[in-house]
Length: 117
Length: 111
Image (tube, rainbow over all chains, first blue to last red; front, side, top):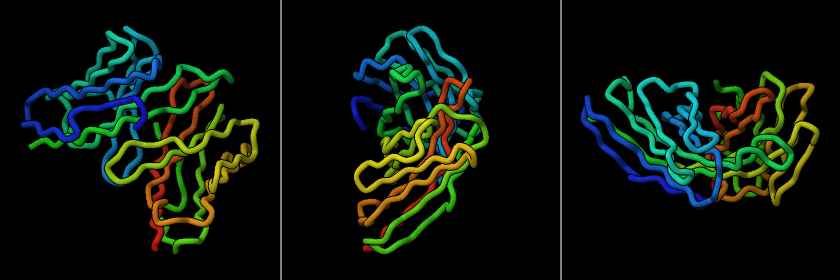
């Protein structure tokens, strides 16, 4: 899991509540990402940030929000507008670009499993 | 959007055998990466192969890339029970500033 941490490991939420998932990295990486993973599925990109104070929507941003006020931190808020939030959420970080000018490897946190009751 | 598509989806082999997985993609890429995920955990990077490379090795892993066929393969030689995991390919697409992950290949190595 490298130098990237996520908390909590398990999170339970009642319908209609907003919850915030934490992601912190000490790798001095510029780029950070949030993915959602459903059972037996691959990763779908929710939001990503290439630099502090900037972020872009991924493929499934509806019902989610993020902030990037510090380089080390990229919290994800799952809002009540997200229709089916129960999933495994993964945060990742990477150097913006490798020396070769392409996307470098991503380092993943251990994940947060969110369950809506 | 998901670009990488792994084939086969699930693979069960005996310890000591080789395991081969394939990944296909649709658009031009800068590089292709393979990741491993143990159940309920985060992904771990295994190997990266750039578009101008055809083959790369790392320990018991061998990755090939055929840009004309837009496909890649991951070979795990002399498999061990500890290799049991899901394996994902991810493409860094030209003109797109993010990775696109496939749906994953579940590999079970029977001791």
